[in-house]
Image 1 (cartoon, rainbow, N blue to C red):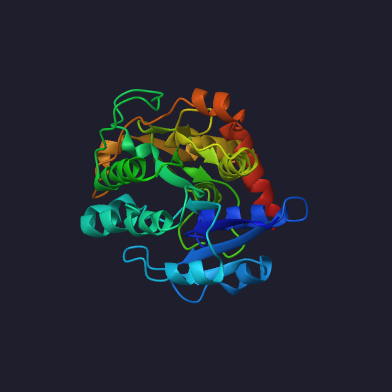
Image 2 (image 1 turned 90 degrees about the horizontal axis):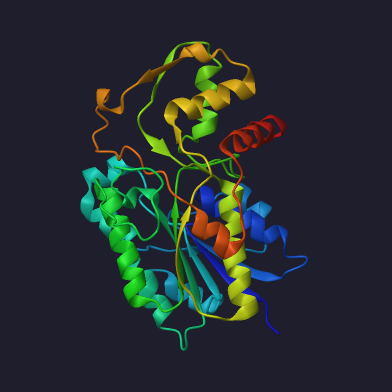
Length: 320
């Protein structure tokens, strides 16, 4: 029996690196052949040294250039996890065409469809920003009504996946937080950013009226691993849509307060302001907290609390 093949699309990003590390760590007990795509060349050496058995492929997802090399060298994947996206809302607002061409996985799905049979599971990462943000704890069946280009591109991607794939799981993720990656990503990570500023002992403004359900990165990895294992062990096709967030609905103020409590910083440094007081160059939904009942019932996974995730993140940073 051949090793099952898992391809991480966007493997050099934050979630992608955590996935690669997790899949590589279990290779002793559950052998997987691993590969990942990256957009810029070459991939980080620190990442390559940490996961020497994973095959890197440079791929342009807009045109699909490089996917044929995956076929020739790696073969048909049993599972494709699509983490790649233009995910900065302001960047999407400035270049809607790029947002649509990158975030709608047209070339990727055309490539997957070129294989005979429906033997590949696509796990596609979406976002809580598909929701309008006018109520609390959105459910999967609630209407999508995004307020910005990023959200619109992700809704279009979900629709494209649903219409053109017969075996998929779409994961609507909230803010992802947790430890830094093997090869540090260039974007600022939320907990580390808050910690670094609060450590200076200077007052800092945070929004009190925008709410999310941040998810600890290792919980999201567990969700993806569980879906992968279920498909490989049972072989039953799925058409699944899941909200993937943490259990806590928190504002930016509350997020910062949890970091301050964990570090014993002075919480009076945290100054609540309204999101409407700052022009970010993009409209942002006010409350896109998500219900995760379906996630818990379907996969029997209960994500950890935000406060616990903050402590685990800061402990990991201290020991790294």
